[in-house]
Length: 250
Image (cartoon, rainbow, N blue to C red; front, top):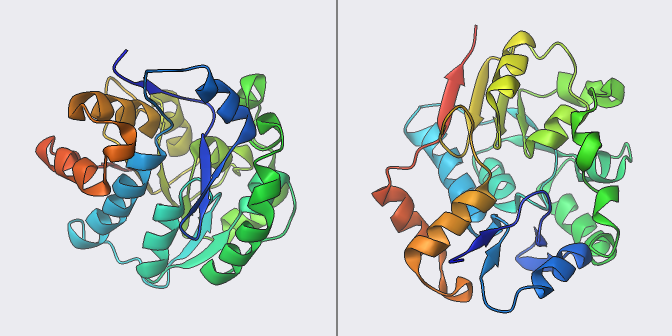
């Protein structure tokens, strides 16, 4: 194989420019001796920053002072930084969605402190305790944290996390996410979502995860993963005319 895209689990979590390797993922990565393996995080950092820039500069969407519920920033730190730079008021839900603790974090600086303290411990936990796996991905949403959705204009982050506590009424909300199927699109429409933005375009009815896209790009670039820079991904994205998918409902 030229490259493997690891799905369903992250290799790394990020905060403050530092990378923390997840213990369970390290076991999987250790099984490979030659083939490069990626989880999408290398591309994600470039792609998701570009998506926010595209929405503001090309689409003309004003993000200043918009209230954002960021379900998890440790796996999308680039998106979180870009939204913060665009003037959004972000509620970081990492403790809520990852650890089921009703403790919202209301600023990027506070999130950075909390992440630096907890990530060395969190990455040693069994991954199934942090993220929906297997049959848990099919469970109906539990609306115990509906108030955080209600107060937000934009819900951003991993879609399984977004769906985890998603209320039936999502009228007027903007969803910024990825890895969406055609069934997910219909579900969001039924919940009266206003706008859906996926960071990767649609292929045959779904937007694939960044792990698939990053593996494809690693194979195209023909470089060692360690040698690939953000500029390499950005240049290839431009050559491919890679744009986010935007669906306006209702």
